[in-house]
Image (cartoon, rainbow, N blue to C red; front, side, top):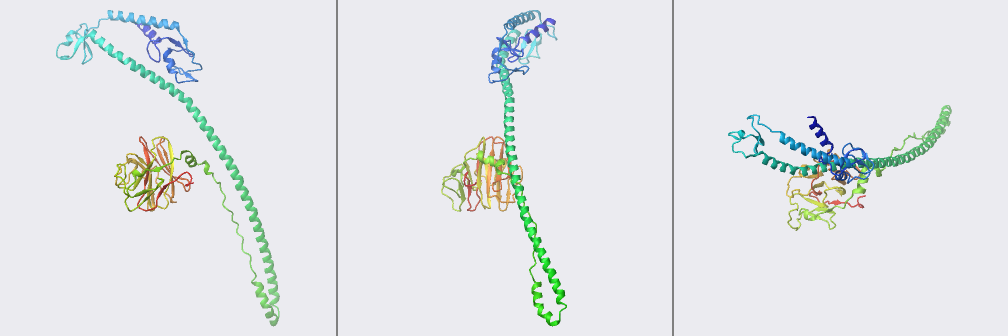
Length: 467
């Protein structure tokens, strides 16, 4: 048993940790572990700077491989020992049947069991394919050998994935650092803006205080003069009341005239409301508009017969008279709907739709396979993500939050993020977020427009006419 254990330990030492087979052209790397030259070269094929050891993950600074000739000779010796030991073991061992105490010489292919001649008697293995053990062993040895290469490939693929994932650690660190610097720069610009805005607001407040103080001082002076006038009038009143009748009546006209002198009004102190004017250029929506705006146009071949698409394919309106258009499979024939170009399956995209004062409309995105014969309004689970207006109410069935808009939007921005699986809607009048749908876009989607039954058009805005 000690010899077998020692031989097993030797076999483990001369096997490559990557392919799990005997080392071929063994090499030693910086941390001291040994590999087949071709295995370690393949493991490091896609790496440049830091080269991790597949066993201990030690990062080797250089890809220098030292040939290990002595280890190569040990591998050869281990192979010979294994072959010799296997032959001797096969010669010495004679397995006996536990049931009949007979030598095991046969093999049942159905039950995959080794048998003695007595085991083949009915009824246990009756009708089974039973053959000599040597033939069965040769067959299964050949069959097992067919698993070696696929398993080696799986091991190599797994090792390659480990290398790729190890490389992504550095990639993640670089991305995080880049984003951190961008955020710091953004906050620095914002801090500078807020400092300038604070200085300007406080300066305006100080100027307004001085102006109001001057007006208040003038008002106090006016009341002081008015008070002096009242005191003089009171003194004259006391003197006049003592005059004889004729003189009193002669002065009475002037007294009444002076008593009606204008009284100054009370000055009310009111400050203008100042605040921080947070810059729109720092909002996420502005970045979305600038970076991801796409040129969306309408597809006339999908338009309902009662819809008229403009020549530039940017506007659509309803008309009571049906148009003489070809009956195409992709044309909507029940709801007054038209789809847009282009198709979207990846990336991020933004476009803007002017809805104006229309009382009934719906806009968003839908699957390319959306039914053109559907009578009910499509839902998100049917592959249509949209917001809509019906009279004075707005809703977005299936969105992350219910649409409650106090200000009726006249222009709506749509942001499709295929990577995140989101469709977001914005009120472009006040740059506010309306709602967001979250889903998985496995197939292409298209811009969706439901026009309603009034003549007010829906219009796709360009980068100029909606700013």
